[in-house]
Length: 124
Image (spheres, helix red, strand yellow):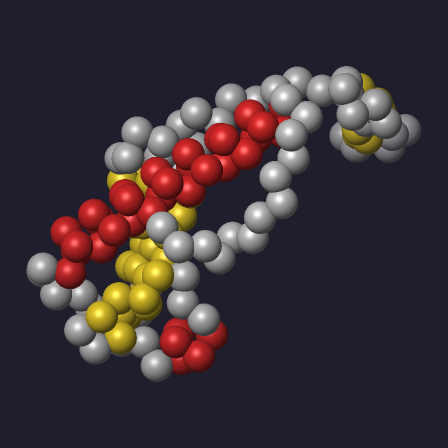
């Protein structure tokens, strides 16, 4: 990648290589995945559909890193009970670490030339 002056004062352009092997690998070890919940009555729905979001009492999104640590919480509209927060934390940790592990495994297989075709909707 090169930074080139565009000819106008203070403006620059990026010149990117067309070669897919001409890249720098960025570490994603500490990057979280986000698990969203809609609270419907006494239940929390993971990754809610638009229909479920329309009748939710509260929305919460938790960021989980590879180590299983909660590193972000965004509580949207509505309120949660005191007992719901630890439950959501446990579920988000379980799902988040599983997602990261699955993505790491798929990337490792891809490096070895073994592509695995799969969808995102599979049971944990």
